[in-house]
Length: 148
Image (cartoon, rainbow, N blue to C red):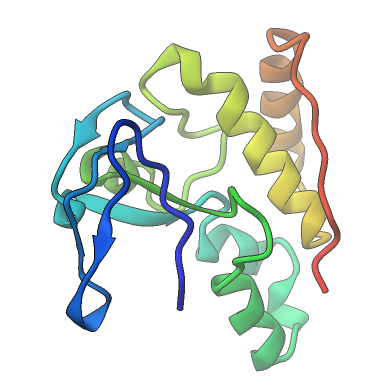
């Protein structure tokens, strides 16, 4: 499986067993920059448990696997710092937002994009939170390609 990594100053090299070395990554959730890929998690912007509650429980195993390994959209899977990702867990935007305020609009846009891409449902509390967040993001644009 390939992951789209976001690096800042230096692109990593891929070595044996796909191990990445020499890169510098920036986690947009907390603004932290790391040079050690082991200090990062690959986050499903819409967590698997949240997605499960939003429609995939009715999907085939193959479709769920496609969602879990979605490499067709740049921001379905993101490299982020361990701490914020683990605090996030399976929470939706009504329960968790990135600690860096500058990430709010990006995260909400990524969330909505993933939900639309996979035709996932949104519960009323989640929808209220997203509407409130969107009111503070006048320049945000949601563009997506439907999942295959």
